[in-house]
Each structure stands twice: as C-alpha cells, then as structure tokens.
Length: 258
Image (cartoon, rainbow, N blue to C red; front, side, top):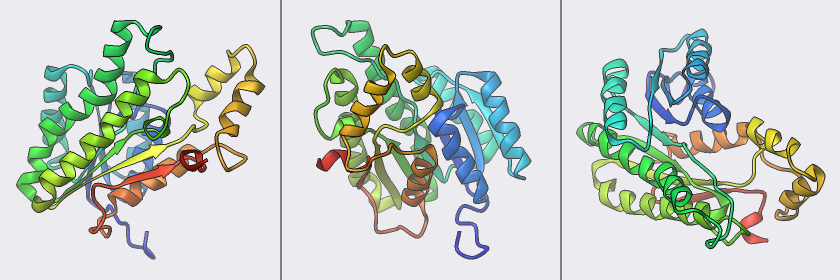
C-alpha cells in the first residue's frame, strides 16, 4: 500500500494451489490490498475456509475445485473464474509437487507427476487464462519456481529439473507477450516454514539434524516465512513495476550464492 491506496483494489487475482500454505497466504495478501480472488485447488473444505476468510475482508472470493494436471479441469476452471471475476489481472501459478530421489531411484510415474504438477499446470493455466489478459492488453503472471532450479541439490533431480523448466517458460512467455502489456516473472523461494514442512520435520528420524541441514545451505541463520513469499509475489505483480518482466527473483536466505 502507498498511504491508504490499495495497489490491487478491484483487481481480479487467480492463485493456483491456494487452499493452504504459501498459496493461501498469497491469496490473503492480495485480498488485504483490495483484490477479488479465485482460490484454486483440490481440497473443497480448505478452499471454502479460505473463501470465507477473504469474504470477511470485504472482498469477493470463489473456490474452484481443479485438477491442474487435467486439461478439461483447467479449462473449466478458467471459464468459471471468468464468469465469477469478470476478468483476470494477476495469475499466480503456485501449485507444486515434490518427489525426493536421484534419477535411478525415481519411478517413472513419480517423474511424470512431478512434471505435470509443476510444469504442465503452469502451461495449462496460462493457455486458458492468458488470452483474456491479451484481450485486455494488461496483466501480470507470477510463476513460483524454487531454489532447487538454480543449483543442484541432493535427491531433488525431478523437482529441480521441473522448476528449472518453469524459469525457462517464464522467460519465453515474457518475450512472447511483453508487447501486449503482459509482464511475466518468476519467484524462487528457498525452504519456508509451512505447516507441511513442520509436519514432515516431526516425522523425520532426526528432525533437528534435518532442519540444520536446511539452515546450513544459507547465509541466514533462519528459514523463510510464508508472509515473506507473499510479499515478494505482490512485489512482482505490482502494477507500478512496469519495467520488470522476464525476471527471476530469489528469496532463499542466500542459498543460491553460498
């Protein structure tokens, strides 16, 4: 906000993978700055809870149950989002799926699921929503990649490769659509303390050692927060940042330079 001005007042924002964790926080951040929101995901109960929270902020919100790896489901989502919101000003492609392992250990089905969730979902969402932005000759797309896209991490072969593809896709779309007034940028977060991360930590054989390994990757003695990720996404989508497109922003505690 600048003073009492909300940067996204009356803008329509679609956030995939937003029924929980980082995606939900991103949706709430946009709503707090005046945006109407489409919550996209699979969990209807969590989706409706998120919608209720946003409506409590005085903004319009809708939950659309979507399998982001399925073309028909994504097309239906895009149609419903346009009917409910009327337009799309910002699209945040946040949905993701992580499979651990080196190439010899990753099952083909897990490899395909990782790519479908992390890469194909971005393509499908943009394929069906980008034309509406092009018609308006304005809009911002923010794709969520990962620190693993920027350098090698042990047992992250599929995830790292998929997130690197997201970076490449971001740059290609920026080149293709900048003349039409569409900005496309990418955020690469490092490890963030989400509910899912803490849940996985408690089920690790050595939680303290595992968390310390996450910390040792960075220049900071702490991990990121979902609030910081949400602020970075709003920065990339900020309508005043017209000169920023095709960019890859890291938010990783210095992991990519250590």
